[in-house]
Image (cartoon, rainbow, N blue to C red; front, side, top):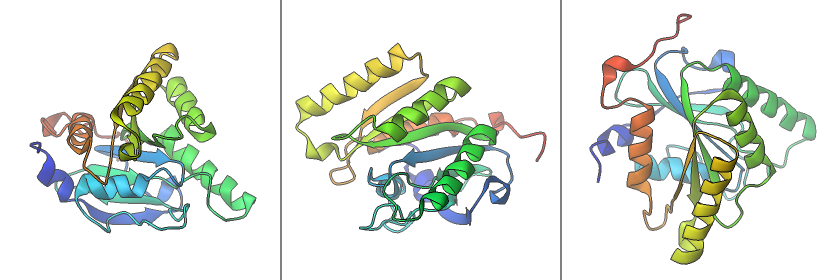
Length: 214
């Protein structure tokens, strides 16, 4: 358990947005979850918040097609579920539209404190993951790599994968951290809550930045 459990369990749906201009006011602090469509992103959000249906999950990868915004029981703290990438069975032109809107959000959202980059621990650092890391490096954005489905590997291989990605981030000079995570057995849930509490400034609410355009 952590001191932040109740805060994350208070998460509630605010709205879904097709593009940046439809998102909540750009003030306070928010953290975005990004990842390939089969990496377990929505399941990770549900586990983080201890809610089975907060983020929509599906047996068909790619169902998260909008920017889904969730609030917490503290003013101007948000969790953002970005569109899944890679497996959605939709036309190429629609994928391009999603990608453009997601890039607009990542490049221009002032309240964005960091990105949780969700990867299946068995299939890390795919093309989308590399693209996100390149973007983070170029924009000085903090990244926390969440290696989901850690229960699918034995402890040794899981740790080896985590250390390999840590080395990759260091070599690329990316401001990032890495952890293992399992929605099945609870591995890493506390670590994730502590990291997000740091980014969301949950310990000192007077320090949250406010956008001059708010």
